Length: 441
Image 1 (cartoon, rainbow, N blue to C red):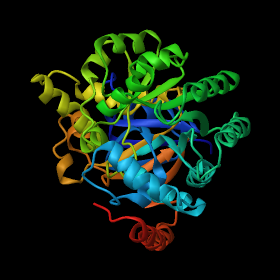
Image 2 (cartoon, rainbow, N blue to C red):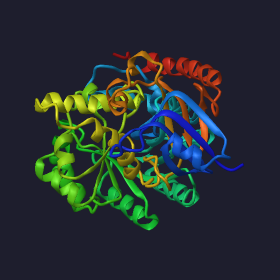
Image 3 (cartoon, helix red, strand yellow):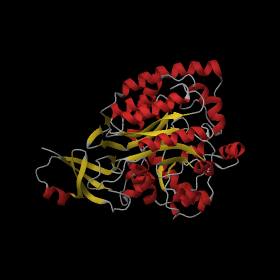
């Protein structure tokens, strides 16, 4: 028998569709065929097996629009510091001694956490990215992945030219992959020269690939770029030809109104990381203005060393609440908007246009929330529950391309005990590096 029917107390197809009470989803292979009330679907498709999800709420799989997954191994290494101090005095020194196997197991640890946060699709930029790819393939999630590129030598690939070559090799190898796309990932404008950015743009054009870069993250970046080039970051990137529809610009905290309009005009996609921006003291991105300008904005957690978790439910809540407080207006950045950011807009930003909604023709990428948790009762308003009440750990099931990755809280593709065992060993190895080089905050 091909296909199956999922039934649940509620189905939320998208931010714009009213939640379906006593809903059902017909899935064949990796795709959604039909969604509607249980009475309608079950009467029409009598011979399909039924997967009853009692006291459950089904939503589209969440999209983490920006992270550095392997950095879970550096969670807690340095805290309560400004971005540049955090990076240059603590993170970069440890990363200079980074090992391939650390990246693999750190990614596995983050994937466990993302699955329990209802995430089916994520975007990653880091070092030794082939190890991130390997871990992601084994786990079954979808991702936009790219090796972080710098002007200075990387522990992952050595000199920049090798990093550019590795990026092209990955683009070649994964151009037809069903679940993984490769991005060209220059780190920032202060770690990549204009010449490096131009080379990255050229590669992206050659492969019709996305470009993934941190942009206008904090005041220090604005000042440093202006000191070097006499321009603000957005202006510099525009003059280099980088503002385009296939650009995923991360953070964008320090933008003028003119720059917001410029980004919107060029079709740039934004990855908004509110909790990391708050924790590093970078500021609060002008999200309300971005949405008014028509920008497609996704939500990212950033890396688990600067957040310090991968809970996208928390990220949704923070994204809307800080704007309401900042503007002193509870009507700005609504639950619908922030839910769209964490689902369909995030999927568009990452280039997965057949994910992010539970509608016919879309991929069967979904998360199932357990309504028996006290914070999810009563269920007058399912969408509000997802945005304002849900937390990582409330997800009981996760499906990607029609296959369960987690079922009844049991993750099926990763041996959790083995990951914990290896992380404990890596922690001791990193701790020895920390003790021999510097004292963490």
